[in-house]
Length: 106
Image (cartoon, rainbow, N blue to C red; front, side, top):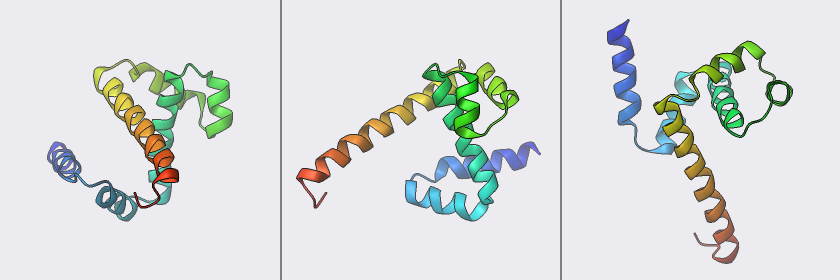
């Protein structure tokens, strides 16, 4: 199992293009699996924003057990780094979208 995980980890880290990664994930994972992973990231983002378990449950349709489990890992260095990258990407996307209104060829 460790070799399989290492292979997957290496592959994912080698895909440096967001479009290629999206294509890979959409091909490799079922819609349900991809949705679950996406929701887990969203739960972590919302926990960081201090949203309540109840609010997160209602908004995302996840169990309190899922939220609790993710709450336990939210302060690890790798999760903090991942959330920082997500935040930077969201801000960059927002800025790019604003610029496109003024410079439509971007």
